[in-house]
Length: 171
Image (cartoon, rainbow, N blue to C red):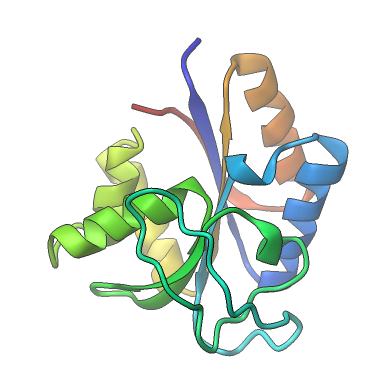
């Protein structure tokens, strides 16, 4: 089976929290299969602070100082802050954290686009997601094993009003 990622853009941290909770509660998605990328602007007071990290292999380690994660998002695997060239500070969680950490550490160019291309997303879609992040969007990605699960996850993202939903085969 080929592994897939379903991605979408949320407009707020509350929308991310609701989507992650829905994925876990109603679609039975493991926290290890959900990735989020949230601007670390401090402008999301509805979320609590997390000060610990369980970083996946290859990811940066350390505390999330001044981070703004909580609730269901705060329980995702591997939480860390990243400075992404051209975008600024972000909080990342899940498998995407490792990809972004490697891209950020590897070169000043690439950033989100390079990490998303590394996951198998076509370059034009990766650039569109980066543009949405620059405009204040929040990226949610769910990693699944088969087409049936991919369809189910797409429905959850649609139900939670995420935008720019796409499915890609991961490399």
